[in-house]
Image 1: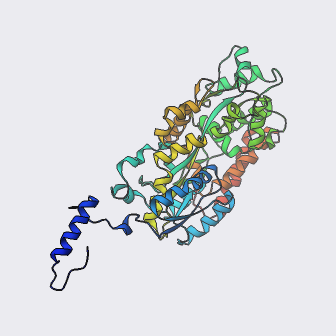
Image 2 (image 1 turned 30 degrees about the vertical axis):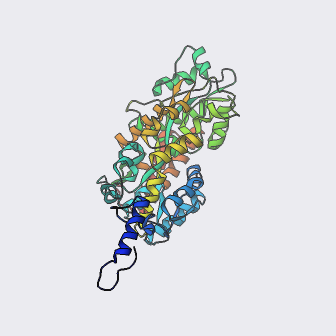
Image 3 (image 1 turned 90 degrees about the vertical axis):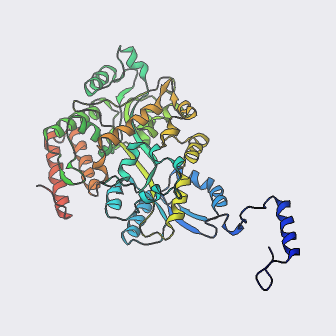
Length: 454
């Protein structure tokens, strides 16, 4: 409308003209549209980062849609894994404001969240003006979210990736010819390996050299543990009878039934051994298992089978991990950062990335249960998606992956790697090797100033 004349009244001519215009536009009786408020974040720029990963790469492809919708500009960096973690750890420790959103790396969750370096997201979740109910935070699988909570259950991030350890068998036909089924427990695993090893030139088992990831499910399956009660009590427990029994069992799998040179195998080499049909059984994260069915290099597509990894006398504890987006405590644009996280991890975006890009390690239950996703992960008639989500749920229910999120795990994990190598090469007995690993781990923790029981 035009400005009022002196005295604060509209002239009859101005009123009639304005009314006619409003009627023509269909806006008579409605609140005026303020174009400048159509995009709440217009003119806002936020900065964020994650380590280099396909999910981040896919998000960057879709970013123009988000920027057009919200009016904000997003600078999203994807440096290499070690470079990202080093930079993030330094910036977070100063509670700086360089980044508005960051990835919370799994192995650093205890340090970064425990130190108060990330923002508690509960206030955002409870405000319907900031988070609509249909965003559905409870749709995220519990196992993927467990490491992104504090001891009180408050959420500090939401997962975009989850690794779930399953069993992949490249030549199930050899097992069937031996009159056996896929193993479901440790005794059956040895029985199967003994029966099929070297049959048709195929070794029964294979693994990679990161024993600190591959071995703990076997350790816990025998009733052992790496720490007494993580994250509260970080006293190592590598010298127990259960730890020695588990180490002997796992080292035997490597020395008796795996290809020569397996102790130096990388993930790629172990996967290649299966793809080429040179090795049969492997327990590892789903990302390394699916290529047996999907990769054009696979020679075993028709004989691949998948299942939960075998359990031990004390239960089944497959490995799982996850990474998620959160907001640093020093971020300047927290509300805008939350808008980005909501979009990046919305049901719609996660589903698009899963179905349009073929991404498998999703964390939203609604996507995992989507008929198209399940179809994509139904491999040789096996519902691998259901196995995947079951492993993630197991991690959330038992909390058995807490050991891996404590700050001292990398040092202790290194001791585990070396102990398994010494046992598999017959340099030491399992009991001696694990006692040495315990002594070295205790020395490292004491040197680092950590309070432990020994």
